[in-house]
Amino acid sequence: MSPWLSTPLVDQAAQKWRAFAERRRAHFVELYRSGRWKQYYSEERFLACLREAMRESERWATLAPSPKRQSPSEEAFSNAADQRTAA
Image (cartoon, rainbow, N blue to C red; front, side, top):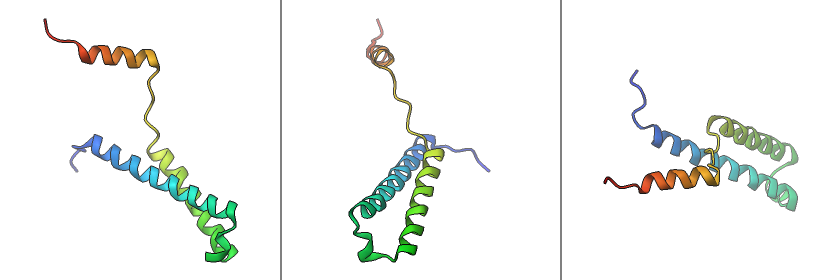
């Protein structure tokens, strides 16, 4: 099997799937809070879908954790390094 050639692309796709899973979970939570779930689901089916959405969201959070955010000082240093020119 060949190694991954497009790691940034794979990471980007994983982040998109994670975001989708989080939006799906948020949608079911909103349906629950508003009570609108009763128009579309039986209680048993809704709870099963909600549990599945929560499991999927947690799974994608494990598979594709949020990118590490840099502290302001690290960000300033990396920006300064990027702006250097050859003398």
